[in-house]
Length: 478
Image 1: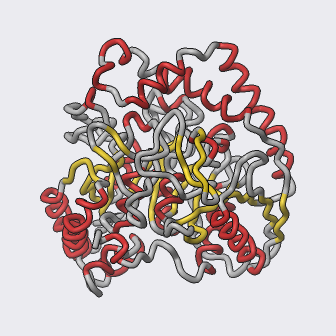
Image 2 (image 1 turned 180 degrees about the horizontal axis):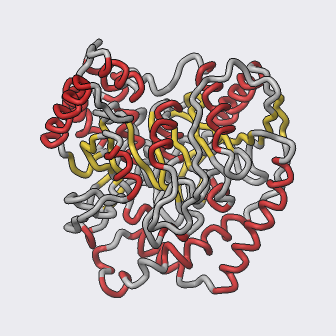
């Protein structure tokens, strides 16, 4: 097996080989380091790397396998989104304001992954304060999509998605307040999971924002499940964390007989690119061939939900940064300044209206899902998003024409932050005309994690050419 092939091993495959001693954690880490040196100048997915320390930890992991004392993720390379605390490492939030900030503790899900044996070898890029569905900042520059360097890898967990696609990490972490795990998962051809609110603990104060989620990213569903089983569960600093313990079963269903799937292409109001439409329809046909019943439905949503999500963000996310307009304005990115100034226009009544909008959305969606196991829609409506896409208006390409629209007009992720207790998985669905992956979302009833995983596992098994098995020439920059 070549070094590049090692870089695209799943965590499960790598640990199987660690256990039978046909591969060493040191060999895998060294292959990823070499790969990073080759592709990082073209991709720019990492803020900083810890390769020397990671190699030492890989040697310790090798010893554990020799002793038979390995942990559930022993020796697996982990790329940590810059937004997470990692002890004794910088957490810049992609901002000049915090470029020298160093944390003295780990965020809870990072601690749980490290305790399970994962090795943090790098931190990954984000836009400033995770504010975009693309990935660029004054501090870290532009992160590029390994499939097409002119296109964004998505955001805000763009560095994590790009690193997975480029073969420079085995697993990664992301955060998601409007789609920041699922957007880069779709654009990079990998898998991202937004668990139900409360399933994965967070530290205050973001833990009390029901739109806010932390979770796993990987190149296949089984690796997502391995991570999810480690990071979920109650935490004594997160009052919102759920006492119920859910262990994901990774057995692949032989078929989807009896599974009832509802789907919508445009959520009632979005323009959909032809490539996205064709790939989504093909994915639905694949699910039908596995035995599922597949029905198109009208969920009755409209553009008012875009204003609603912005008003929610204004009264939490934006408010937490508002003072920077006075203290550090010259250090901020233009899109941050716009976001904060626009948020100041939102009123308490607007916030109440946003809550009422979410209620209306679920009044339609909840009863609908009484009759279905899974809801499917595209993750994104187009792949034509430039790598410098920004607030307030995006110039994106849909159906061969440039549209100037807000970010929420091309992303179908944010509605399921509003319906935050619904679990959602973004899965690859094919390639678009510009060579960039497209994705679909698997959504289940509230807190029904297992249904999402079972359907996604069956779909993945039947998907003949998984996109995460990249041709290395795509990501080499050659």
